[in-house]
Image (cartoon, rainbow, N blue to C red):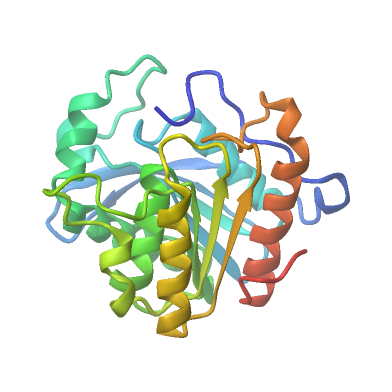
Length: 261
């Protein structure tokens, strides 16, 4: 599991929040290309940039709703999407939702996940008029975000927090390392140096492959930070969270994955 029940997204660094006072979020049911419906949570702002938030393995839950509102408060439109509309419906789910079988079904069809990303992007653009759209994700969603660089057209960039980049096993057909050749949107990757689930050499390999591709990117690894460090309850990693916020907002503001707000 990535963010457990009770996790909260970290506050914006003091000097960055709030700058625009975005509106509170609202539930929106979106239809994908195959007609399947899934829930999203949209928080509108006043800027010209927006993000689709791809959650962790638990799908859309309160952490990502609050995160969308946090982006809106920073002047960035945000829509958090769910993976489980085809198997769990569009209703809100409790924090103790048994996500495992739904996550397994979703992972088996990464093409449908990317179709849902595309539908979320379309909803974001239609409802907010954003001109620069990003995909940002965590854990399972970090991989979704990296792969969106290859699968989605017209993106200004993607941000992946601790997404697994190499194959999990021989049946894995969704590894970002295998899709680098088709990637086109700039990439910011944020990883924990003490993440036991992501090998440091795989992150280095991803970085080298993006260098060879000559695709604009920046990879940051925070020494000592664990998987899912971007969590307010991890007070000892506030400095890393602040830095991550500054990098994400700098990237969104400028289009340069090396920029810091």
